[in-house]
Image (cartoon, rainbow, N blue to C red; front, top):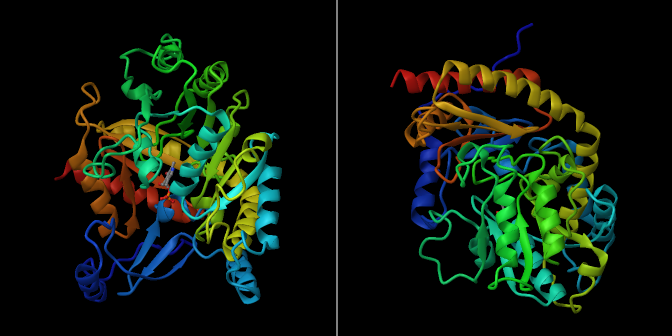
Length: 446
Ligand SMILES: Cc1ncc(COP(=O)(O)O)c(C=O)c1O
């Protein structure tokens, strides 16, 4: 029996009820909070959204890489309900509670390196990043903080400073804390105009040069890096990039902080993306998004001697490690662990379809990603590689109008990114790829 379609648009979009609610947004919500798909959702289950006007959408955004098990996983919801009935808020810094220490134990057990044993919890990803930098500076007694070009680390002061993209994330919000950028291995657009592997990772070697320079020698507290640059365009560095970067950090006694906020919690087919590169070492890892199953939580996990060095009270917060969020995260991580093998199948199917589309539509300059974190970079012409922002918008809008929530990203705003749930049924994934392909066709017919 043929599967029933999940993408079902019955009204012009946004529908009348969504339009009514949009009036409230217009009147009472800051315009600075932007919206990708202006339909108000009434209910969500698995990989499908149901809006207030009776339209259905396939969810390929996952709340920006959060709902890795899909929406409203039953066991996660049950854990939240059970915990919420016992106590809602205590503040771990006032009277501790079991879900917090159990989640910390769980993270130590599933950490990508056995020596990452101690955690602290916060609310947003940006907050975890802020605390990583605080801890790194305190521990090393050094001040210089580095991140990569094309990176995104959040919207707080330090998060913005570490983030690369000016618009819309940083413009007009300065002065920001002093931080420094080094090149990321964006091989499709090599910053040094070289070719991998004959480049011998010149971009990583440059980091060594910079850390050795008169300005920075002995002064680098940490380098913060995303395993795969998420907002920057799902840029996957070559397998030997981070192992080399980690050696350079070690040489300079600079801590390496891996920001697994978007790539973690099973998103790339391993629990943590850094597991793809077992020979690299690092010191701390930031987590958020997918660990909470939709609940508000972030974490900083690191080597015990680093995590214990800061004075008591130096990190923490009123709501950090909320009991219901911890309870959700424990269950969420358990279920992800048991379902990691599904991600490879998703990756195989998506890669096959996206590569086929690339042959048919030359605007697809690059197909890349790992696991269920896949993207296509659109260009005006494959030889000039000029970013194709207009067609990226056409594809995204087509998807929306035809019942699929899709996001774009990228330093040049020309990357269509897909965050499928790792539990997405094959029939929905096929439908999602069909809609994407029709969206690409729409760019030809425009
Ligand atoms: C890699 C990375 N770090 C940090 C953040 C910030 O997380 P939050 O939006 O929860 O503050 C994000 C969010 O997209 C992210 O992708």
